[in-house]
Image (tube, rainbow, N blue to C red; front, side, top):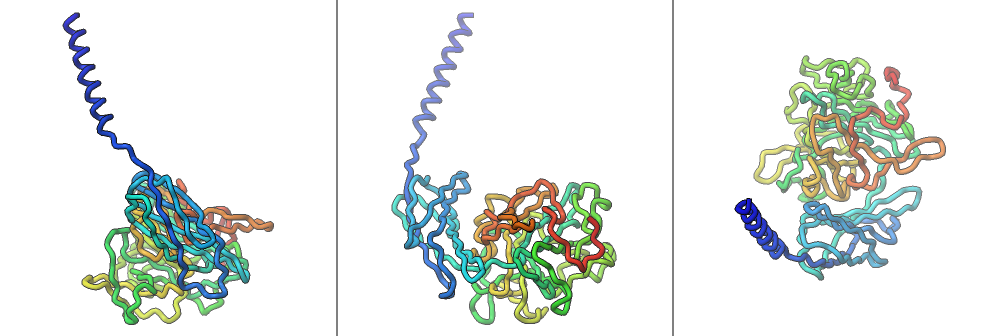
Length: 402
């Protein structure tokens, strides 16, 4: 017994020495400070400027964040930062002339390692779009089922909107990536465009498909009752207004009620359905300023990818979706369209992303968050839902059954 007792003392002594050694190796982290200066570009003189900006210092690697407000000059200093790699965002809003204007800008993957560093953020303004992405279901359900993807577009304004001719597409690169593309565009100003891998358009002559305030439309990959096809699917899309039906295929049926979207640009990559990555695509809805030319594609320098350039001014709404929180810095669109990103963090689990309700009017109509920052505007849902929060259904959809 004495022998074992002595052995225990020796082991405890050795362990204690190792613990002291580890403690001795711990380096105390000294908080540091940084300054941000805001400048505004591209804003018309009649757009009211905000009184201040909210600046967020986000260290995703350490799950650390500090938020500060600028002074009247657009400057702010933040102390208490831990050294590391940060995304710094600046956002604000103003109102005037019956519209809401959002200001946003960001810096990604910047090293804040010592005190006293100063960073300049250029923000741009945008007017809140009448039509918004309300819910996006992209990551599929159990059993690797992905044919139930859908997009809900909502009229967030107080005026009737016509969706005739509206385009929807996914931005290249398909996945959030550190890869950067140097696009070759005829006017030599690649920063003025987004680059779509595919474009679908709503048919109509301009006044065929009105959407009243508080109403929404569903664009389904395949407008069928997927709960009957695949019991693990959470959605019945048979009442969708539109579907992205591939004409030259016979694998998936055509819903005779849902209007077929027009495939305006695709470069022949689709076989039986418009499948956008289940890991999170970047999407835009827009009204083109000219007819989509199938041969009007551009490509990045030194690469074979082909995409269609859409002027940023034509974009009504855009949402960046990434794999998970670690990919938020890997943006595919300008911060003026989306200063952040949203995600579900997994695939084939029926999750979706949808906008948060900002306010509800006296008549019960919901107004949704639209600050052009998906990190703030969207929530993650355990299960996708068609027409969440009971939006209105357009009167011309006579086949939808609640």
